[in-house]
Image 1 (cartoon, rainbow, N blue to C red):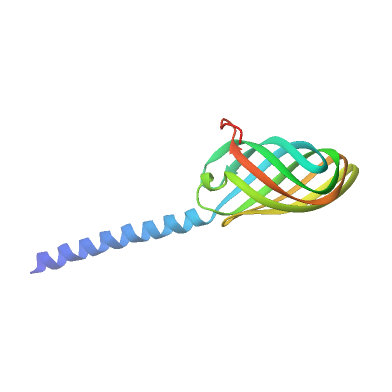
Image 2 (cartoon, rainbow, N blue to C red):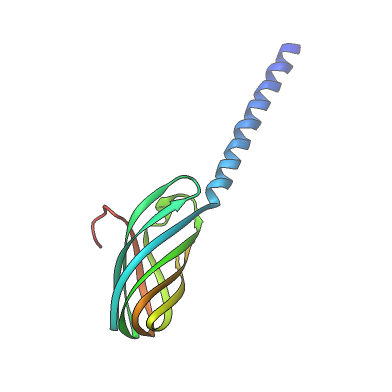
Length: 154
């Protein structure tokens, strides 16, 4: 009888450790923070287009080089080149980041300009801040696509 109690205690202890480790891992995955640095250039004249590249690093050790494309429209005009940084929320794995985001923006700049924007894709959000140069003014809505650098263009 004593051996059965010891065996049961060991099994319960092992199960507790496994469940505790699983719970911590799930919690850590849900709170993965990812940051992107990027450079883009583009133009707009009612139709808006921009493309560029970037690098993403996550707190779980994952990283990726990415290709960026933005297409949209609105009351916009100009030509610009920007560099910036973005912070992702709602990420469990770096693969959650890839895909199309919906973005709205209002921008104005002559020679030196700055822009801040928040975009969403399901439960993942991206807040970016950029600085650059060019001439641009307008309001618009766009589709912002993030792809792994080696992926085929969409």
